[in-house]
Length: 212
Length: 218
Image (cartoon, rainbow over all chains, first blue to last red):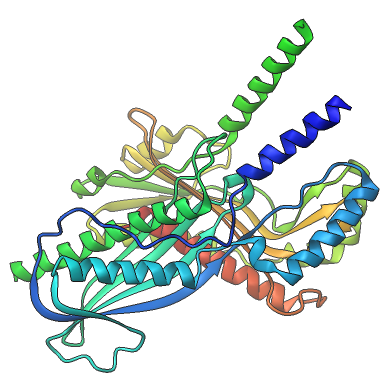
């Protein structure tokens, strides 16, 4: 009897350590000074690419009858509410990222004005178009602790010409064996890395145009 | 009491061994890009396993054998997966390195078990070797005994590492494991068009991810 309680207790603790898929990170904070001002109007374009998600694996006990019933129940639950079992870095997370990037560039007065667009139709030749394309976002499997990988491309266009182009691949740190880093914290970690790289890219581009 | 202490030690040892088994990616240092005069030997290791359906999950030997027999048609189709892209991958890396002013030499004599990277480096007159390996390709499906839990998904595991042969230091290492669900009906023998399409996308993603990891920010 005591053994059964111990097993249930262990299962309870393991389940409480399992990250929750449906959480979305809060807005990102960028506290370092950018020290850059360009007397231009900028547009930030967001492009969505391939998204690879990961599902929660089915926990099996080794008892064939119980497991067959369990698998059937879980498969039905997967179909009814896939969001509860699917880890992804999708549009909600990307929207938070793009808004945070825009707010950071705005608050630090990097450009005169900046706005997010989905189609670059209203761009004048002197305006700057910054495109961030999430070429691929991937959440790895449970054995890799749902590590998030972002493969994004930064393109800066002015006067209809591509002036700067870089690809950035960043991955979250899911921690060691007993670490309990939440999926939301992993989203923040990986997004902050990407934001730093993109801001560094904008700085590199501004340095290049000053050199010309 | 001794039994309990012994059990605790065994559990701790198992946990430690498990944590050692996970491969960690190594980011390429910015210093690497400050030396454009360097030369790199590139090598593609032969494919670790033939294209196939990888069966994951709870299966005994008999169940593996029976389900393999049931998947014979799918496996023989997967065996024909085109791997020409893999032969060209080293050339893609070389072209991108050359664009950045780094000279390269592709080694075609690499054996899959050749771990003596200094030989590859010396053949190319270099001290750095970039090795690419296709670890798994095909489809993956989860099983519980003989019961498949899900539909087969496209599967591609690709890895790469850059080794400094003068001190055997790993300068960069990356492994990508792409699993892509099939859009539409997967079970369309004999040509499995939807599954093939998913495999092509998985390969493309894995290839780009590996390249972008190496050249990230450059």
